[in-house]
Length: 383
Ligand SMILES: Cc1ncc(COP(=O)(O)O)c(C=O)c1O
Picture 1: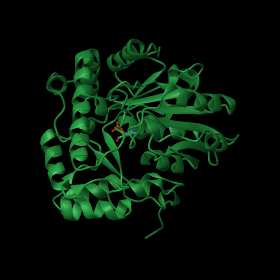
Picture 2: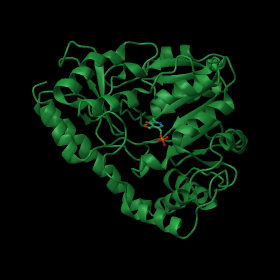
Picture 3: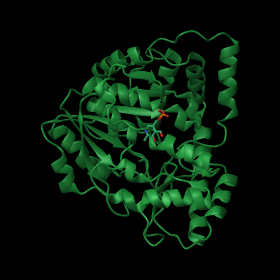
Picture 4: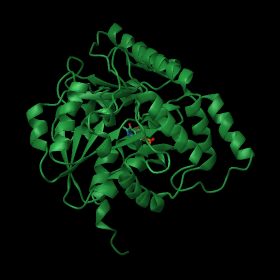
């Protein structure tokens, strides 16, 4: 057989798939992969099936159905006072994952550097690699997962073309404050680079924390590509409907890539998401409350076992510090939890390029029914 293209060399199966397989093999409760184990809202599913029955089943326009682009434009204006033109600045994509890939392919040339924050969501690294770019990681350190200002400045250079921000952040649950975002914005201006702001957990922000879309910072809208996901927001991750909002020149480039990856996204699902966004006010309040209760349920359970740490500010993940629990590293401890306690989690060292910090944590996903969470807590007794 002839050899394969070099570009996939070094690519391994995603850690999420690996851990889900292990969970199934050991019959363990799966708190590894980031999706709910309960179904999404009835009103959206009903709307999708109505559209299917009524015959909305052919290709959608490649930029997205006008109705959904109009609703995305409306909600950004309503939620954040951000104005995006539905025709020239909004593109519907196959989940945030495709938006990230298309954005990176449309901006990055071989040799361009991309600043990322580690722990880093794994699709960024493979998308950067496929474009021939070079990731430069800044580590989020300590119990607040903060970056060091000097290290941040050292990461930027005239080779930097793009910086990727993810707030609320997977896996740490950190929500970046305005004072943390502003120095990133200054560096993006100083080095004239683009900013990809991955905001898929924008509605899962707890306590007094507040989500600040990067494009809302002074002077940032023109250079920022804002990406989000209906799959995450409506608990329907299998639908893979997401979007990219950016100025018309960037949007034009993103669409040029998007049309040759997927061309367009399932028509009835886009139409149902458009309706869901229009009706989203009450839903979103309940969505956030539900997940905050799940976070608290799991944290209280751990606390009763004597395991205490800072509550995550957003998302549906916990980075559990292993200090005081075990001397094993994250991979070893993860293995032990699956085999001995029948609970699957993610070893976060897979999300680090530079530092060993990830060896001392576990990522737990609490987007699960209360029943699943309670069973997992029972299994974890005696850690
Ligand atoms: C930070 C982050 N970005 C993007 C995605 C992918 O979103 P989607 O399912 O819409 O492709 C995920 C999914 O877990 C994520 O955690």
